[in-house]
Each structure stands twice: as structure tokens, then as C-alpha cells.
Length: 346
Image (cartoon, rainbow, N blue to C red; front, side, top):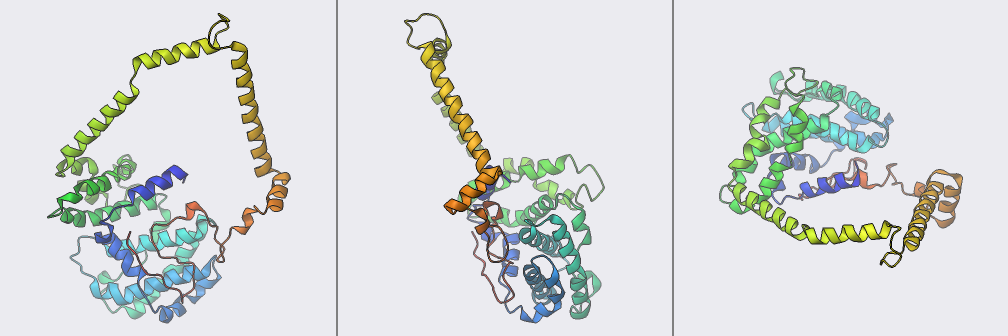
């Protein structure tokens, strides 16, 4: 993910009502689980995996949730599948801690966790089979699991979004922006979902179609106001940049700078060529220096000599500290079972 995409993700996630969304409350219920010691033993075999301590922590958290929350709050009449949310949560957390290794380790960890999960449900959850939550092993087959996760969370959240508009119309513009931010998701599935193959199109997609931003946005009370504001803003930009005379003058000046014509003109052709050569020399030198620094032994010598060696930028758990490791939640599955971090809605 490039920097611009990261910034867009951060911007689109900055919604004051996020704590009221069901998916956020669901995440909070997992993050805030405590006293995992009694479940860590069930997950001890995961220690041998890459970053096994973090994987074991995720495992213990899932078992604790199944026993203390899911078993009590499960309602067959719920309009959404909490078990599906849980599976997506598990896979995304495994991916988060293992992404710098290789996604094959994510699939391996998810596969190793499944028998532990199933055995725990069989032994501890005294419910009918249709009320038990089991791992969804097909999840590893979906190359677009992130988009599926986001789409299902949006589907689950939309009912709570619509309720926030009742008596809180001042939120309309923020909700409008939130719904609008889901357009790329629907664009992603648009070409995939004529198919009945669940590896291509998720089986819950038809339920999500009713919340397509293209169908929903025009029904929000602030829609017309937002359209007017955007048209006005676009007009101001055109007025500010649309200067035909200025454009003509600019083109004329440019022509005189590159022309070898009248020596009395304001632009001296010799000077223009000289400055151009200097600029090209600076660019070439910068590119060469960058290549030496980054890709040759000389670069290593420079970095080590100046104390810039990026090998030092590693956290104690073996993960690289990078912008791309950003996660919008406050749960950090790297620590061992004794470290718990509270949930703080954005």
C-alpha cells in the first residue's frame, strides 16, 4: 500500500460515530477480554509457529469470546452472522502480525488454529450444532478476503448508521462521506458477482446490494446540499485557474525562452540552455547518489558510518516498524498472554 492510499484510509476512517457501529462494538468486545490465562494452555501448540506468541494470544482470545460472549448472546434471529465476523477478525489479525513474513504463514497459522477451535467448541460449548461457531476453512481460498470483510462489516453496520440519523440530522454529511467511501468495494464486486461461485462472489453479496452507495446516497437528507456545495466548489476552482489571458501570456513567454530568434528578446537562449543542462546534471547526480546509497556496498558503509542502518529499526517482537504496519485498532497481538490493551474508539 503506497503512502497516498494509507492517508486515504486514515481519512476515511475518521468518523465520530464509529463507536456506535456494530462492527466496532464487536471488535471492542474482543479487545477488552481479560484473564486469558485459562485459555492459553489450549493454544500452547501454536508456540512453534512464526511469531507463535502472538498467534497464541489471538487463539486464546477467540476461545474466551466463544465461551463467555458468543455462547450467551447468540441469537438465531440476528440479521447478521457474528460467527462470520469472528472468522474475518481472526484471519485479519493473523495477517497483521505475519504479513512481513509471508502470507503462507497466515494460512498455516489459521489452519493450525482450526482444530483447537473445533475441539474447544465440542468440549465446552453445550449448544445445538446450529448455534455453535466454527472456523470457516474456505477463508484461505479467497484472494479478496479483505474486501469481503469490509463489505460484510458495512452490511452489518448500515442499520446502526441509519438509526443515527434519527434525531441527529447534523451527522448526515459525515454519514454521507462514510457511505460514499464504500463505493470502491461495490466496484470491486460488480464484475465478480454475476457468478454463483463463492470463490469469486461471496454468498452474502445479494444482501449487501440494497446498501450500494449509488442506491442509498440520494435518499439521505443532505444529498442535494452536498451536490450543490460540490458544484460551487468546482466552479470556484475553475474561476481561480481559468485565466485565458494568463495562459496565452504563459505560452508566449515559454515560446520566447526556447526560441533561437531575436537576440533582443527577454529570454536569452544560451542562458536557458545552460540552466537546463545544470538542472539535468543535478537530477542525474541525485539519482546516481540514491542508487549508490540504496543498492551498493558503499551505501551500507555510509549508513553504518553515520548510524543510519535500518536494521536497527526492529521491535523486540521481530516486526519491522513501518508506516505500512499501521492498524486502525488498538489491539496488539504481539505481546504474550499477560499483556492486555484496552479498546479506544476513534
